Image (cartoon, rainbow, N blue to C red):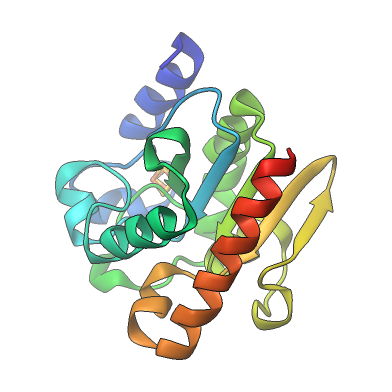
Length: 184
Ligand code: SF4
C-alpha cells in the first residue's frame, strides 16, 4: 500500500473515536490494491475478521469469493472494507452515529485515495452510511451517482447465504457488475 493508504490503516488500528473500539480485538482497515476499480463496502467485521484483522475472511467472505469467482472478477483486483472498521459486540448493527463517525474519519478518505470507478455497496449499513438511504430492495442492481462518485448497490453476502431468493438476486447483480466493469 502507498504511504497514504498505509497511514490511514495505521490510524484505523489506533482509532478510539466511537464506542466500537471497546469491542474489537483487531480493527479491520480493509485490503486490496491502491488502484482498484471496484471498492466493496460491507457492514462491520465479524468474529473471524476481528480475530485476523482482515476483511471478509469468515463465512460471508467465502460466499463473496464465490460470487466474485462466478462473475469472473478477481478478489485480488478489488478493494474490500466495511462501513465500520471495528467488530460490534454480539454482531449488532452499527448505530447511525458509529456509521457517520467511521465514514467521516476513514471510509471517505479511503475512497478519495483510491478513486474507484465504482463503489459497491453490500447491504443496508453501507447504503445508510454512504447514500443515507434505508430501503435496499428497490435499489439493488442499480447505479447511483452522488458527488461525482458512482455507487453500485447489492445485498450483503450474509443475507445471500441465508436466503436463496437473495442469493439469486446477488448472482444477477454480480453479473451486471461484471458487465459494467467491462465498460469502465
Ligand atoms: S469503528 Fe471506525 S470510528 Fe469507530 S473506533 Fe473503529 S475505526 Fe474508529
